[in-house]
Structure formats: structure tokens, C-alpha cells
Length: 115
Length: 115
Image 1 (cartoon, each protein chain N blue to C red):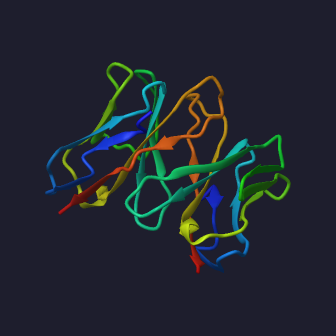
Image 2: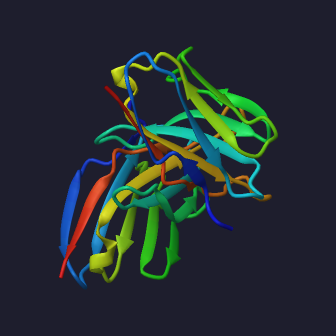
Image 3: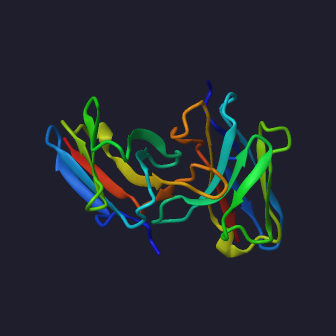
């Protein structure tokens, strides 16, 4: 168990560019989440996968955002035509096991800065 | 609409004393509550949780109390240690359409334990 891994750790991009982040969850976890955290706020839910199926999306996830988990393992989050308001820490988390209530395990995040 | 509220942005205590962090929630459908600890440049780390069928859960120096009628929970750390200095997030989850266990987070309380 090496924990949840996110890459890159930091990304600086110019407004209007596309960016893609990757998340590798804990290997036996079938549930994967993306969150966004801005300064002074707690993490905010963006989207949820169970295996490869994307089952929930927050209204925070505009049309410029897309997430995939093609084989039910790693996941990618793409932001198209980035805006300065997209600057935030993007956190990935995973959970699994038989129990319905199991804690989410977070990665160290990808910090996005849009200039 | 902030469903999970941590009204104290910061708390400072002396090493060896008790730290009490508070959290209020508004959604009566929440049935699972968690505390996370976050160090700078790292993702949130799970600390302790409690189900709504209980009113107390203890793990070493950490105890979480749940008062469902008041929609209030608290985290007690005894004795507090300098290494406990971090931002503490309260989080809650409940039934959702997609079946996820997505967490709703408070804004966090920054705990400083002074030697």
C-alpha cells in the first residue's frame, strides 16, 4: 500500500491552455473521488467513480472539466481553456473495502496556478 | 449553504493540555462523521470517525463526541503535543443519489500546540 499518488505536484499554466492531472489510487480501492481546495476553504467534491463508472458530478464541474477512469484503476482530470479561477489544489481520494462507511484516503494533491 | 461549519479558524493550546475542536452541521441526513488532519503541502490524513449510531469514539489520544440532537461534534486531543499542530477538518457524509460516500468538509481549524 503506497497510498494515493498524484502527478504532477505542481502545474503552472497560462490562461486558455489545457491541463491534465493523474491520480493513482490505492490498488484495491474501487471508489475514487476528485476534490478541489482553495485557500481558506475545505476540500469541495467534484466527482466520483465506482470502478470505471462516473456516478456523481458536482455542479462545480463545468463543461470545461472532464474526468475519466478508463480501466477502473488510475484516473485523469482534464481542464480545458483554463481560467484564473481554476487555480486551486486538486485532490484525489480513494476508498474501498466491504464497509459502506470507509474513510477516504487522500493524495498530496496537484497545485494548479493559472497565470 | 455551508452544511458543515467550523466556527473557530484557529486554536492555540499548551503542550500537555486538552485541545477541543468543534464542528456543527445542518443536514440531518448526515450519518457518518470524520476528522482529518492536514499539514502544509500534504493531502488531508484521516484521523478518526464516528457513525451516527454512536455518541463517542476513542482512538488513543483522540476522542470524537457526537451530539445528534444539537447537530454538533467535537474532537478532543489529550494530551496535546507540538506534532499535533496542523489544520483539522471536520467532514460528514450521508446517502447520495450516486451511492458515493462523498464528504462535505468544514473550512478547517488551525491548531497550534505550543511547547
